[in-house]
Length: 459
Image 1: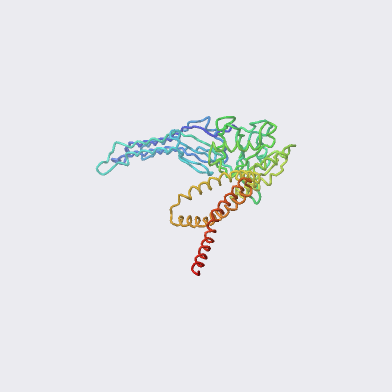
Image 2 (image 1 turned 135 degrees about the vertical axis):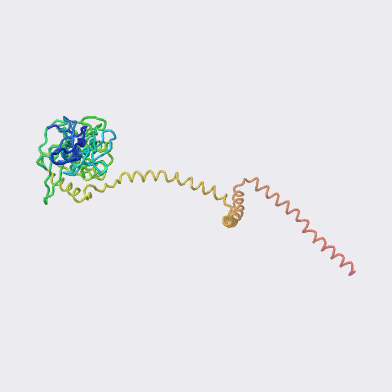
C-alpha cells in the first residue's frame, strides 16, 4: 500500500431543503388552511480519527467530497427528510488546515476524535408555520440555507513515542524488526526504507510504546538532497529520539562523529524544538571486525560532549536490552540522568595555558612598576608629602656618610700619587716652617732686651 502523508481535498456540505406551500383539501374539513411542511437539513462533512488507518491514500484519488442535501417539505404537514452526515475517516494524528490561510483547524490526535469541517444547511420552514389569526392563508414558505464548502490540507503526523534517526543503511529497520512484530523491508543498500514504519514494542510490566522508523537522512536533506527531511514531521510528536550511528561508515569514507554532527544540524534546520528532545546515542554494528576499535574513539568524543553511549548490534541483538531500558526510563519517568555524563578534565590544555600566563606575567608587571613610578611624584595629598619628607630625612645621614668617606678616597689617591707630588708637598711644608721661624725668634730678642735694661738699672 502506498504511503501518503499530505493531500489537498475539497469538501461541500449539503444544502437545506425548501419549505412547502400547500393547503388542505379534504371533503369534510372546510377551509383546512395551510399544510406545507418544512425542508430537511443538509448533511455535514465530519472527519473522524481512526487508529486503524496509517495513510491518506484514499484522499489522493478522491479529492472532492460532497454531502447530500436535505429533502424539500411536502403537503399534508409532511416535512422533508434530513440527510446524514458524511463521515471521512483519517489516520490518528492528522492535522487539518485551511488551504487558503494555512490556519490550523483541528489536530485529530486521539482515536475517535471528530471535527466538523463543513456544516450542512438548515431546512426552510413551510407555510403552515406562518399562519396567524390575521393571516390564515399564507402563500409563501422559507427556502433552505446553503451548506458550507472549503478546500482543506490534510497533513499526517504519525503518533509514535520513540523515533529512530540515522543515515541510510544504519540499521533502523532491523532494530524495529528486532524489538517489535513489525516487518519492514530490510536490505543492504541505501534508502531501503522509503516510508515511515511503526512498530509496537512490548516492554516489561505490561508497558508498551510505539517506535517509528524514519527514512535515512543525509547531509543537505533540508535542501532536498536524498529523500529530504519531509518525513521528519512524523517524529515531531516523539518524546525520545534514538540516534543510530553506523560504526562501519569509515569503509564508505564517513566518520561516525561527523555523522552525529550532521544529523543534529539537519534537525536544527528543520525544527529547533525537535533538536532539543532527549537523544539516546546508540552506535550500531558491533558485530563488524573493526567496529569495537572505532567504538573507543567515538565514545571518547561523545564523552567530551557530555553524552553517554549505548552500543548495540541490531544483527546479533547485543546491547538491545540496555538500549530499551534507558529509553523506557526516559519515556515513562522523564529522567534523563543516564543520557549525560560529566566531560573529562583536560590537564594538557591547563599546562599550556600556565606557560602562556608565565610568559605574559613579566610583561604585565613592567607597566605596573612604571606606572607606579610615574604616579608617585604626581601625588599632591598631605599624607603623600609627609611620607616624602620622612624619606628625604632618612636619606640625609647617608649623604653625610658619603662625605666622610671622601678623605679615605683622597688618602688612597695620595698613596698612589707619583713622587713629584710628594716632593712638592715637602717644599710647601719647608716654606711654612720658614715663615713660622721668625715668629719663634722674636720672643728671644725681646728677652735679651729686657735683661739689658735690668742690668742698666742696677748699675
